[in-house]
Length: 288
Image (cartoon, rainbow, N blue to C red; front, top):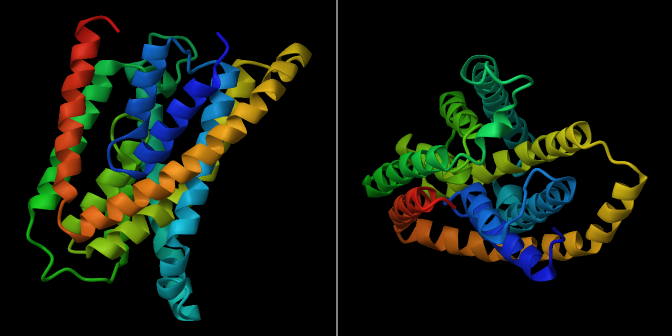
């Protein structure tokens, strides 16, 4: 099925906004793909989603650049310190994420030959459960009165805990990475601004390897022959349009997220996740 520009724009807005809001872009995109009759496993869809992820990554860099420069790049000592913190969190994320991937593929899916964790990504029951869990976490973190004693300092303990939670998010679609990591930062006593900045610094580091993995997986599962290469080339323009749309939607989403964090409305994102979880269950029950 050939994807239209309208479908590209719908997916771009969903990916761009929901990737950066704490409401799980994957859950929204998977639901949209199912409703539009698209197959997310095809090479053209994989290429499109890679481009959309790239658009949101640039949105994060542009939006946070000044605040990162004032905080992380304030001095050589500050830069070295935050590089260490980001590195620790990313390494912990990798260890947890890869361990879960191994357990899922070798234990949970052991009856399936050449099983990959991606087989679980379209499971609506798992998506609904993940949305419910992260929704409750966001509500709990948003309801805690921690503003007065919150600190703008992040240590190795805090970065490790955030890394652990981020690693738990990776294999499960619906478990919002930003929602879980920012909520963890808030619960650890880190103030809202620093929790947000650190969470999205981790996102910029994490996105390129995730995107590269998707590209390599696409090539492995669907070797691209001459005819398919022409088809993917024709998708390049719609994908570029989608990347720009996801970039714009991402910037708008980040402004919304920052505003709600500042005025204490973080928990409302959690209520939305719970409502979306119920919607996913309904869609599953009616056979979507």
